[in-house]
Image: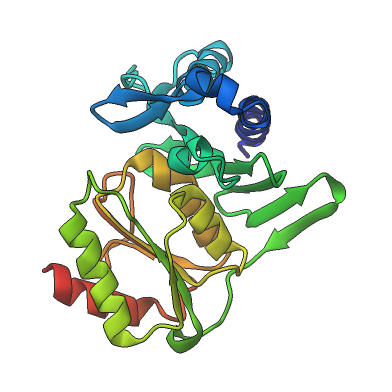
Length: 271
């Protein structure tokens, strides 16, 4: 089921990733203005963001002309369909623009409020994470010999690596500091801010971290990762412990083992 949609998601994520890699590999001081920041009410946006958003949107309209579209750089397209493509053409724009090779493209397909297909591609590392609801989560690099099913870790909180947001626009900086305070008070093993939520969540799915926590992040940053974590055996809820949907305003995506304790800590802090 959803084979066509999965093939589209993985191929389109890789296609956008190749475009990003081209921008990145040609990113020098002499060319900086071609990919420099553009003012936006949503934050910082590069030429690469806009170009890849346009290309992905064109492909969706060509292959799935009746589906709704939600993305970071353009106005949402609502066509009254139960299926919606949700994508981020470039997550990690700040990393990208500062020549830090840690960014990704992600696509997710939702049926009503539930994500059913996901793909996240890291172009510099050439790493692809993908999933279909009910069919597990997978990792692919270079060729079929490097394809494998992925699963979350079983580490407890005192050995956990936990990622959270550093967005200064939404949520507020104060809320990010509140999350940091909760984590440090509990003395988790390590915290990380990668500035690329789609990668952080893929890493949880592949046992490279134990949880991600975001308050008020954008849907296109979370949709693909939420399914990857669930299908890798993890748990995904909001801060109050309700199942995460595309309408949720907070998210805890974890290996499951540490989830109840994180829920308790965050629900107390944000209630």
